[in-house]
Image 1 (tube, rainbow, N blue to C red):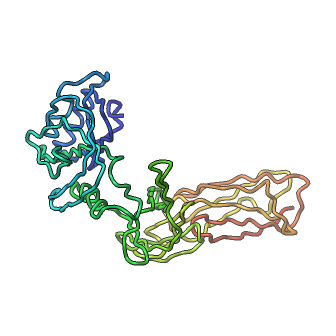
Image 2 (image 1 turned 180 degrees about the vertical axis):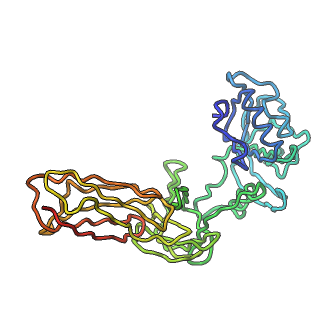
Image 3 (image 1 turned 60 degrees about the vertical axis):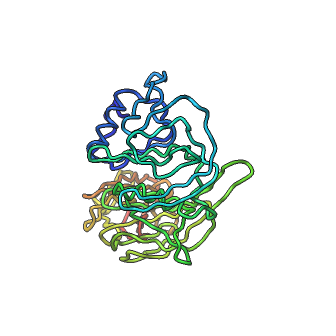
Length: 357
């Protein structure tokens, strides 16, 4: 991805290298430039010990960036770990058992914030305008953050690593006791004119002997500013809010649509009415007050109220509107038909009646 130009350093603040043991010279150079320009790189155990052809890289492709040297190829060691100090202006403090560390790491000009036995961990080094952080332990030996029973400071440590790099969560969840909700994955998508947020209960599986599935509960969701919020699963408009309750489920997602503007029903304009049987007719759909791309479900009812299911459609309506085509058969019933256009974000519907001859 780096060699193909798919990584634009200007778009990111943090680059995470998760068990990137093999790293080519071109990519290593790009990472070095990213950090020198003000970015943060965070790596776990043994980054770049092999080159891009998976051959031993001597002192490594990025060891100078992290401020370390390796004294050999020692086997991993399992130790109790303790991290204390601060990353930037953010204090950290956590102890945990079972850290799987690389004992061959020796600090040169980095700053270790902790040790696992005698092995240095969480080595922080300023590089140009940026920062390089080598955790020097396998992250799968770190406490599982989406469970409730974790050592004190475990989640604060990870949060501090990101906050020191200018990365803050835009959506936060708190439980009934005001504590942060950990067992939920929050996913955000930015669409034209709207934003989508989904809450999905996380499941942890460390081994066959341990499984944790998040519980169903009502949580309070906080946004950085007041927005119009639509709960798709509940079919509720939450209002212009920056905090609101949401039902989080352990085994399926809660979908939310967030908009700067209040969303309304679609505007429907049939063309060429009255319609003639045996012709193809067109209908225009738009949202004049919205720059968002909307999803609209179109349903057609014949004069006796029976759904003409073969004419149903789901339309994406961008800013400026779109047009749908409906074929009217020669043997379709004449009379007053109903077009029902429902906005899938708000649930609001517009009924338009017209004659078919």
